[in-house]
Image (cartoon, rainbow, N blue to C red):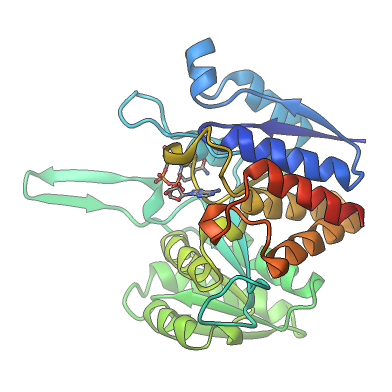
Length: 333
Ligand code: NAD
């Protein structure tokens, strides 16, 4: 029995999370869900969108599945996602990007995984107002953060029979900051003679990604480039509704879809649960439930290939619960 923290989240969060729970149960995985309120409900009930109980639960269980939460602008609370990332030092944002059967895009045969450093770079939010005409934002890159994301990417490549790691950077301009990042990636590359290694400047990488995305395998990059590239790559395979995401640290892992709480369609039972379900598949792999992960993965592929039971964002007219029921049927067969 696995004990996992479950956060339903806001907006479409409860609908898609319920759907995902149902499909995981149909795959026969024994999970004790430790449900924690995070987001707008928690804010109303406890005056804090991220209560200590939720933090303690993730600390104890080490694994969480999380629906999207609404970040309210201007209520004085820091973004829940940023706080979780910092609290648990979730230094790697990992996004597998894969062409899917039945999802029409200009490309086929894409299969890559992006490792984005998640803790520093311009995202540390260090901004100084020098005077009313000048603001400086600090890009901080450290050896430690560069080393651990690089090592994680190579270790993943090695363990998952991947052939190549590409470092994406802009060290031709930011010679020192990106130079330090590259230095650490090269050191990691030296340790893995079974994995080919190359480097691309970020602008060139963007061009190549939209010309021949099939040539990419594992990408390792800094926070800002990773943010942009990972959405670009999601677009290559059908968008944010069909790519999983995970935030990983030394101690804890939080699995979640990349999309937000979609307030425009919340409560209508039409949200697509597939991105969160794909994130849950990654979670099942991480806890050693590979058989269930494979069975849900192939159910998703069948569903997409048949194209008969899809939510409106994928061109269908099925509800979230109908998609969940159909997936349960496919998992059972
Ligand atoms: P969003 O991703 O919620 O929505 C963008 C568009 O995509 C909307 O039209 C929405 O209907 C659609 N969409 C998103 N997910 C969908 C799904 N599963 N099925 C069908 N359609 C889907 O982005 P937004 O509107 O910019 O953000 C809304 C809220 O979500 C904000 O408060 C934002 O801060 C928050 N957010 C949270 C997370 C997270 O918790 N991980 C991530 C991004 C945004």
